[in-house]
View 1 (cartoon, rainbow, N blue to C red):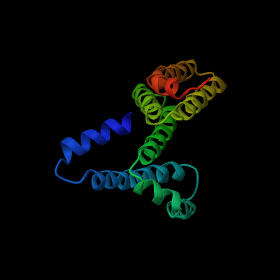
View 2: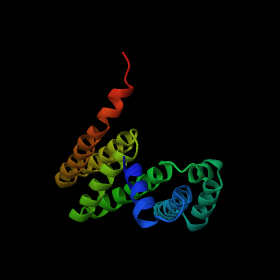
View 3: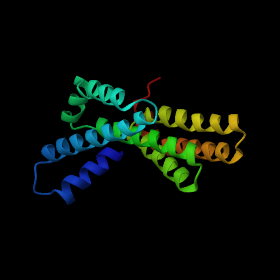
Amino acid sequence: PVYIVSAWLITHYIFPGIAPELVLRGLNIALLFLSLAIIFKIMRRFISLPATVIALLISAYGWNLIWITQEARHYTLYLFVFSLSLLLLLHFVSSRGRWHWVAFSISLCVLVLCHTLGIVYAGSMAASAALVGYAEGDRTLLRRSLWSGAAAIITFAAWTPAILSQATL
């Protein structure tokens, strides 16, 4: 739902005079570059600069990334929100601040609204933060992580009509 609504708003209100396909492809290319920048920032927390650049170049050159930018569908938004959620997870776990928790929770809800499989990623991120809180004995981190996961599960209810319409007995 997020991609459909945002694509409609962008093509009808922000760029109304330009062909919608051109706008959506341009948006997908911009989201891909933003995603790569976020992934670069995440990777720099764990590996050296040369290794980060080489890994990013190898992954950016893949045909899948080129395909998702030209497909004019929701995949680049999904990649962007996923990478942003992962970055926010790292900030939330390292800082334990309230605003990082709120931003992380919102990103999980948006991730769930990007794709039906977003619930898997959102759940695993919330569970990861909860495990860190449990392992370190930080009840606040544990509680906030569980609330973030619960918000993602509640948000997943938006997919119920689509899932029920595709279900067969």
